[in-house]
Length: 347
Ligand code: FES
Ligand SMILES: [Fe+2]
Image 1 (spheres, helix red, strand yellow):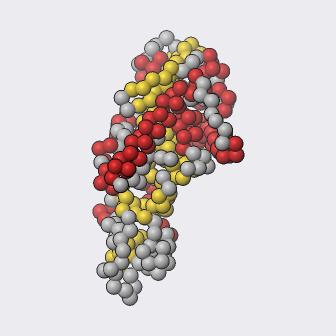
Image 2 (cartoon, rainbow, N blue to C red):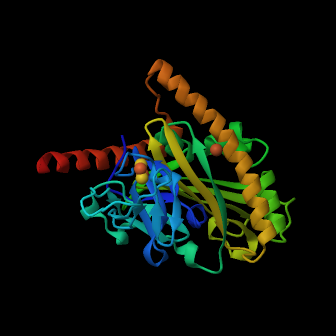
Image 3 (cartoon, rainbow, N blue to C red):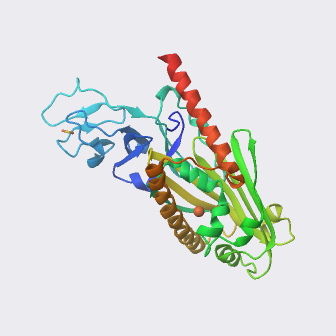
């Protein structure tokens, strides 16, 4: 189950560059493309003629042409033209609210009249020239909640990512979790330790010594419907850790936009926004490449975990380390319950 009345990241602008993109979001099969005025359009991926996927078609100016018999679809879901046919009586296809913001295309898979663009999560770093951003997209064959759990409990780094961001000291410090206005937060602070390999590289990228003790932080914020934003990094020890002057720090915000595809598959948009050496494109590429190795490790674990859970339908244990994920799941459950209740009231 997922919240439908919410903004999800659907794709990145390059994915609809001159061509349509078919993507399932929250069980809705949607075609995305650039329509009138270059603005993104999201429609039911269904041709009103014979039901072909419109995403297999091509662009003709601002209209989408069905790849089967040439029906031309407009951005309002109405057929514009078709060879040798009058199209006035053709049924319309569903139009989904869609917005382009912060370098992403966002879609609202629920009730159209409730879509308010001001509800899109504000990402200050995406518009700040002091930040460099780099990331990618993964498809995970697992329920989106497993990814939420994974990102709200970073103790797994010690075991799953020992050659990049993991280190045993993570296990020596308990996380603390709490609820804030609109967010579940879980944090861990590790002081006076040596940085793990990926953070050593980041320190070097910032022209900082990588062979001296550091203070390390992991602050995970969960926001509805399923966004996790991580403040992570290291600073030379004794300068204030997370609060240290930027000249001693190497870190940033890791974004995780977790978009359910179906109950058992997920689109995972991830990346890092860092506020040091923002013009160093090579460093951006290096960090992105190293993180992609990390997420491949997560993918294998989560996909196998999904299969096991399908096989056993076993109950999950909630331990101390899961407290952040428990808060996040509670927020999701409550949002879904409220959505169901308002549907019942309308019916
Ligand atoms: S199915 Fe699209 S034009 Fe025939
Ligand atoms: Fe991980």
